[in-house]
Length: 169
Length: 393
Image 1 (cartoon, each protein chain N blue to C red):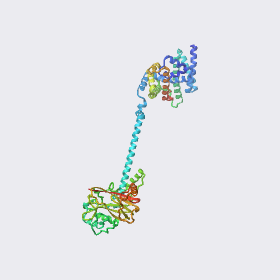
Image 2: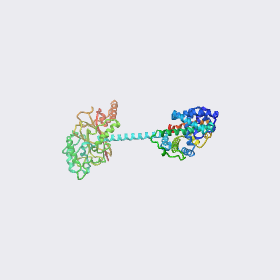
Image 3: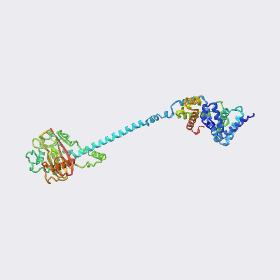
Image 4: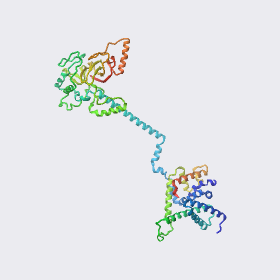
């Protein structure tokens, strides 16, 4: 499949970003493999996706799955309690229990952090969960400009991440 | 919004708040900024979680509830209210009031105890070692005991307006007071005057003072409270830092009030005093000095330790209260002749400059606590002083 010049240029940029991100999270050696796998997927399976607004979220999702998979594999490889292949449970098509547990844990931590938000941040996040846009939030809160709402939300997000801690990712 | 400000949109990515334009701007900025790219990649987990409507609903419910801080500790809100200026000021005023009232009560209690101690040291004739010789009412006195007691006590004092009838124990008229038998004998004499065990089961207990005679500000038994007195004295010292005598030290003299009965014998206390009764004070000295009697006139008696002295009280001509002031002086006043057993020092009122000078001396003596004729003398140091009030009806 022939790549368009714009898409090729975009993938090169995305590759650099993914590589740097993965290297900061799982180390440089594994990051190369992870980045290569992600790009192979983007190139082969999602070759029809060209717009940046679609391609980049797709890239984030693929990177996240690859990283989770990488952690799981490295854990399994290095562990003495690895199970024989014939005892491995067969996938039943349902969500991975580990992923479900991880997601449930993240939700609990997020709920705990949200419960400590106060005042304006509480209102903003509530409106965001209700599906309001920043323009609607601006109108609701009576802010002078939408940039003010962006700034408020940026600070609230920082408060929330501080509450979540560093290891929530 | 330019690309540099695109990071402000990060918060809207996971929740899906961004519009298409905002998303595009954020993604384009992330391709140029590795930090922004990393942040977006980290948000992916949150975005995936918040993409679930059920999870969003649960989280929205969390935000609808009160804050976790308030929910976990209801005291926080109350303490926050308490820390406001008005409640703090009210609490401070209340605390200061409580402390002030406490200090006031403690001071009043210390003053009361101090007065109590002074009263016990000065006024009570039943104070100290002579407890068993406390006076008894006349109605309980046996005639035999009274006759026995009269032998040693019917000694009239010179200068008395109503001399006692002649008796076996009467001395010369010049001699004002005569040293009595020692204290032990006096105690025995007093015991003879006390009621028998049959008539008064509690003979050893102090008899109440008759209503006609008031001894000091308060008359109450003291010997049983001696251990407590020492503690009270210590408390009083702390409270007022005033020098106080040790509680165990007996007073320089003790006194009893006696009344002449119809048969001529003398009895301690007697019944209620009536106008016309003959009354005298029996004084037992334990320290040498000069006993001054003030009030209606001036008398001066040289006393020696262990001696008993009789001092007649002025005869009352009308109902009411009479006051006698007994003062033990350390030396003879200059105006008094040494060796004078009893003398009246009040002179005829001088005139002119001498009168003014005497007035000044009187004022000085009055300020020093002296009364009556003592003001006419040079003011010696007062060792001990007792005020005796006699109530006549």
